[in-house]
Length: 185
Ligand SMILES: [Zn+2]
Image (cartoon, rainbow, N blue to C red; front, side, top):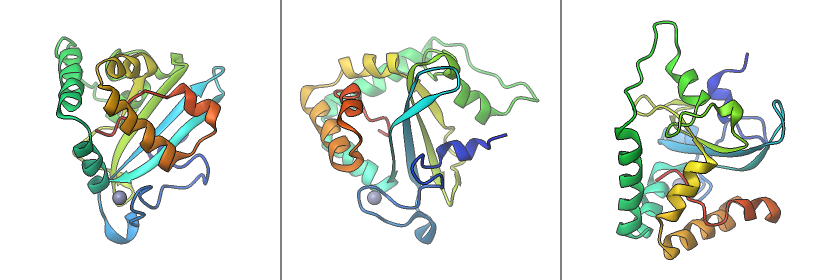
């Protein structure tokens, strides 16, 4: 069975990400904290296409966040706060792996990942392992759409710029995610 950490390997190289897409710092050599995001479009139960993927170091993610307007940053935080506040706390059974649970459903809506046609997943890493302070998570395209509605035009432009500059996926797929938030904020 596929290890949970292997799900965050690059689809292109089939190996773990080794460097930041922005500053190219090497993760293994420096031991810095970093974030991996991978987005998928599912076409059938067992077939899904990678839409985009990247790894970004913690410092570059912070710098990007500083470029986003305070209003948009606040809107994102308020969205998650409001959405998660009313969800009953999730208790893990003894035989349940929290990593498995967190990757098998949308963090906000609870929809099973297997039932999502478009989704993104995000994890925080250090030294090739999940960072102990953050569980990876899945967000459905419904959630990304709801967040996007709350962002200013200038924030969406910053996010589109980021994708165009660093991710360079096929244009027809990029189009799918235009105006959608990048989720490492
Ligand atoms: Zn970087």
